[in-house]
Length: 142
Image (cartoon, rainbow, N blue to C red; front, side):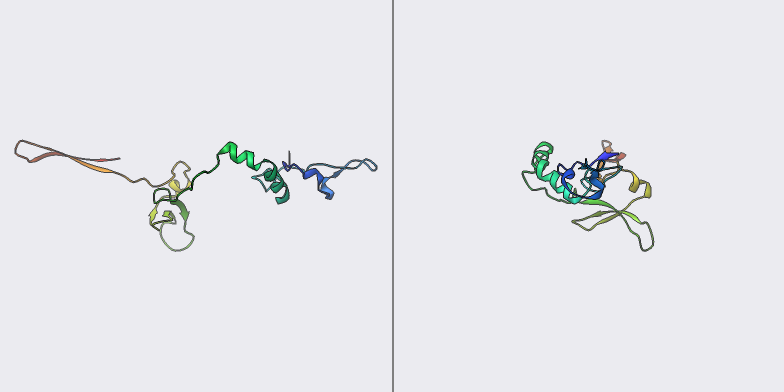
């Protein structure tokens, strides 16, 4: 069980916050096994808003204020998606800028370490003899 983190939760008059014996009643912060607001830390949107009004500025400054625009580029526009209709492989990468789709396996889809498709670089290395004839050819991918 945990308590709502809303700084004014105890001031809102609802039956579930009312505690104590007759003649000595008081309101207290809600206590539950789970909450649905403020990522599981506030009992209502009102308490979430109260928390942000009191602590939001400090939280943004502590965890990092955005000081320049964040840009969505072709490189970071990839998202994992699952197609719920049609035939074929339902799991795929989708680029929100180029609208390109790349199929993937269900294992890749469920793997949180598999974060986006990588561009591979291919280098062809050829060894030649004194006559210029190719005697060895290697293909490197990285």
